[in-house]
Amino acid sequence: MSESYPPLPPGSSQLVPSQEYEGAPRTKPKGWSLRSCFFVLLGLVVALIIVGNLLSLFRRRLEIPPPLRERYFSHERRAVDKVAIITLTGMIFDEEEGFVKRQIDQALRDDRVKAVVLRVNSPGGTITDADFLYHHLKKLGEKKPLVVSMGSVAASGGYYVSMAVGHRPDCIFAEPTTWTGSIGVIIFHLNLEELLARLGVEANPITSAPLKDMGTIFRKMTDEERRIFQLLVDKSLARFKEVIQSGRAKFAENPQALDDIATGRIFTATEALELGLVDRIGFLEDAVERAIQLAGLEPSKVCVIRYKPEVTLAHLLWGDGLASLKLFDRNAIFRGKLALLAPRAFYLMTGSLPELDLLRLP
Image (cartoon, rainbow, N blue to C red):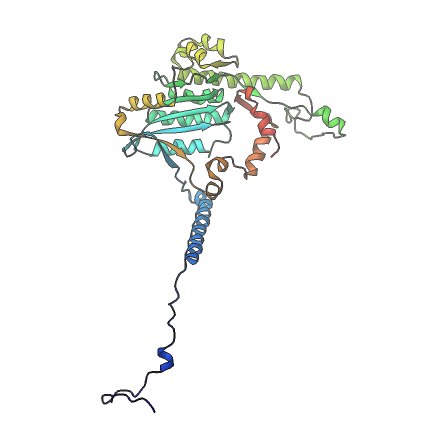
């Protein structure tokens, strides 16, 4: 017997609900699962990294330098006025567009930076690159108070750039274990003539004049070539002394005292203090306090920061330490190795043997 239904109002449909349909299980609407959200988010992150790195490739052409990161160091984190620590670490080489120059530029542009501390931990480098940094640090020091804090080594070119403080008193701090000095110039020269002869290799350059290939590594240096190179070294040393006299009032008044110690010798911090090469024995914190004082700031109302490179894919994958080593910059490695093969003058402390590090195979 069929089921009976109450009569429907006029004009309504005569559809009857299906028994089979009413008993069918209801399924949940499909949506985003946790796994799907994760992969979408991961894809967005990777895309942003790729786009960011592609943009960084074109920044030089667009002349838009990427800003450096600021990392809090000490004092009041939320203060408006800042003291910036510029870090110079390692050999001074290829500095025209290097990290130190970018730190200088950013500190100079930032009106909130009222004073600067130059943290030096360097055995020196080429005379041109040391002089380049000295020139720009001196311009910075003319705009804002500049104080130097020496780390483990601030020798030769590292001492050279420290002279950017000028004659302002109590502005060069050396730690108790700092090595400094090494006032002098060196040109590295290799003679591979005998080695090449054993290998059956003979160099026959064609030159426009006898001195065109002076300093070549394929033969012994002649007396005339050595005399010319010595003259270049002496003139570079004279420039070094002029820079020291511009940064040390004592030696400007007594040049003979500078001649007596400009022998290439390395001095301890205590010896350097006695000789007048540095002003005080102290740590980075002491140099920061002096910079705050020179800027006329209140310590409780200043934020001390350090500069870090902008974030790149290398930083995200390997961190700041490995990324800063430029492990994959083969051009930089190649240039570093060639630096010692060509006759080139250095303000460099060679006791740490950085020249062997440059020649080391990758």
